[in-house]
Image (cartoon, rainbow, N blue to C red):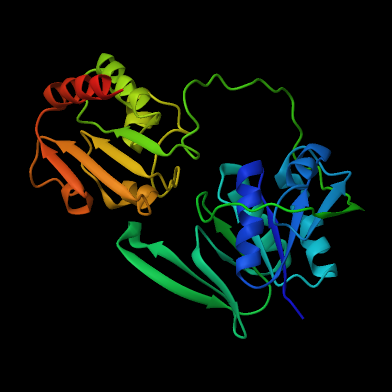
Length: 304
């Protein structure tokens, strides 16, 4: 009998990826939807079944206890949750209510006779640790784990009673512009080596020529405020898997590189020839970004 693997993400594309991942693990892929819109998004995915939890609170984390009970009733072997800000919160709470282990930002997941096995980075990304946890377990998974499939999923509605401990007082749309970094094939990132915020203009132009988006290190977002805190890349921020990652004027600390450890190609521009980024990069240029980026921009415009 196939293991019952449940998946959830507040991001539709990531939820579809997780359904495919569950299938690849040899289990039945059961997707959880907290709204009719989420269920519709998963109707054409690799999920064998989509459970629409009616009565769910709009805030995913308010449903944690109800989801833990729901999974227990159905004999779930594992819950895979998309590693987003809300997903991490939900996963931790479900694991707590279910008294289960949590594998954070796990990769190479597999179900064995011993339990759920996965790999994750530890000590700021300096080591890869493989863990196996017995019984029901929860794992968070970053975007880009696999290509989502398609199919006709069976639908079932199940009523739940959320805790409702947190209430939404006011909601405003976030002011965002540019490319969704989690879906971008090319990402250009900047670090504290950028001298002037005005220089971000040419960085964005280069990214646009590459049909990519622009991100940053944590310090650029939190200390300088040039980016929102949901645009920085690293162990406590975005974890990406682009085809090309171009690092501009950033050192390449382990905490940051954790976020792009699965990039297919890494290129770097830095004035310091001994910068850690060059140990990670496939291609590197030792030079001043103020000289290199305009030349790169010119070459890209001529090619395009």
